Image (cartoon, rainbow, N blue to C red):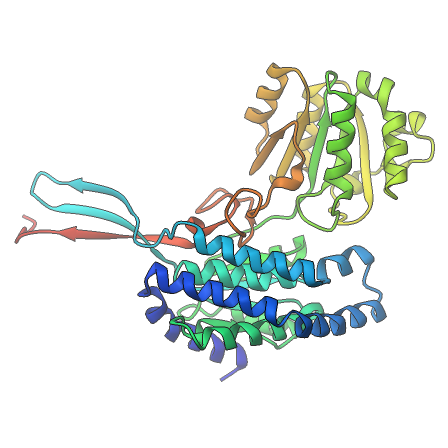
Length: 415
């Protein structure tokens, strides 16, 4: 039996006992896991240094190294995420509706675990902990397959979590890490029907599309983030600058960062030159339309391909538009239904933008960087779904459940 099938089978066997644990037992285990991460932070950072050095030697861009990097503060934040998950309401067993039929049958709909969740993701070791915490809280076993770039970090993190779980009611086998770095391990996971109940991919467009196109196991699709900010004519300049810089430069390597800035022509005429200087100070490379280049001469020309690119880097497209109609058309063409923002004091335009933009999260006067399970109060997230079936947006605990009907009778038969 291969490593993938063997570990998936272990997770499957652990899923039954895990699904029967009480909320208190699961919460206690999460807190033990958080304590273990903080206690073993030095060992995790040491393992992470191996990944970082391997990445540097392989020419990994700095923005990607940032996603991979762990330090004491980041590990503490990851552990805090587990603590937040522990205090959140447990959705398992919740009664969603109760119906009494004319024949006396009582039909009760409740939340139940999905079973075994497979997570395929790239070089973000924090996902290892977030996914483990959310899955275990909802009574789901989890099979993790992280990117090879983070293998040393993920191996050490799971080792620490397994040791912590050994002293709790959660079976350690409910958490599995696939260590085989070959593409074949992903391909095998995608077809483990009967052992894995659902696959959730987290990463770039190529990874997600590979999973969507080749999986026979059901998939919850998370999306790449080609996110936009539209500065309307009435935008307050200071707010527009603050939101735009945050959306692009605060952490450009993540999926909720902005890739294209759309600017109303009248706002651009008065404020775009200064905004361009602010981006230059933040070390952001600008690529602009012809009108943008007249106001920001050092901007490179933008192409259609640029508008369809998720950079995850200090690179930003700028396009001057004639109004909200053109902004909406651009977003409909190039957006990935992730996160979009309008900065405006025009309430009618704000309402129209939020109503008409087809995306998981649509902002008025706030940075797209808030599309995040932690920021939404979910403690952490399993991913940000840009599809419309099962779940959409940051997926917290309820998104990791299915439903079951309990029917109570007193001898009814169907005629």
